[in-house]
Length: 72
Image 1 (cartoon, rainbow, N blue to C red):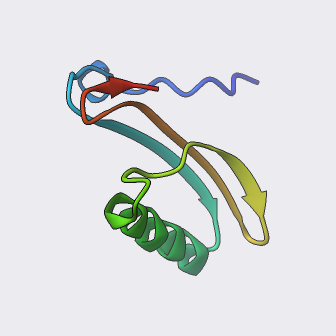
Image 2 (image 1 turned 90 degrees about the vertical axis):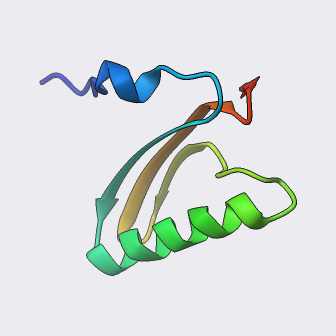
């Protein structure tokens, strides 16, 4: 089974900010994660936190390879 996620080229190119997200789980938990990610943009850190997280009723994979012109 192939688990490689291929994002559209237009979604992975850019110089300002790129956010790639995959969420799997309960619809309410997905909604909560999206709200939390939006709040992270306004928090002192200033961008969604990257990583793969498995928690109760949700698995998330967040990637921000470029944010506000910086490479991560």
